Length: 250
Image (tube, rainbow, N blue to C red; front, side):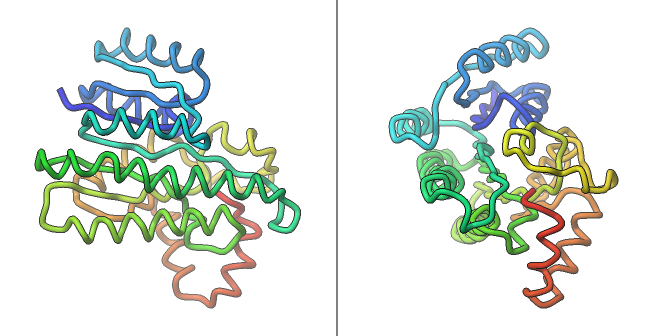
């Protein structure tokens, strides 16, 4: 039975990955901060899909939490989903530097270290995959969130290039607006976002898994967002910066 470790696994895209992978027969290691929600999610998945589900409560912005997940990854998994993340509504000059550094710790350092912990075993076994959840915000310009997600995309593409010719795949997943807890937790006002731009977490994960199977290094779910990203790459960066003020961070 293949195995997968998912960070940020109790809600949103992480929970959708857990459902999809359990349905596909993966045993799971679920990582999140809330131990009670983890236990509830694990029981639900085990009862519904009959797969083994392990929980690992950890705060990936804390050194002990990050080290614990690194240690578990060195034991070996077939798929790592680096999904944990957060946003905040403030402009760069209005956000405490501690919050910005915490974001970089989670979006960049944790992704780097967990990927590094997982890859040697995958390469030795001759199989494996890492999905790093980024955002369409990576292709636009809005503060530290966009910058950190751009790093995730570049890191994923660079690492995938290093592993070319092996059977280990790395992919950055870049969703647009997804109906999850993300925006509420970040106290973001998304009331002005048109309904047609919202995606479901399950549809995002389904397209991500198709793209991973096809060997793609970057996945942008849904034709609407593929078009937005394509246009964004063609127009001047100053214009995309203004567009991003409307689109927000995710």
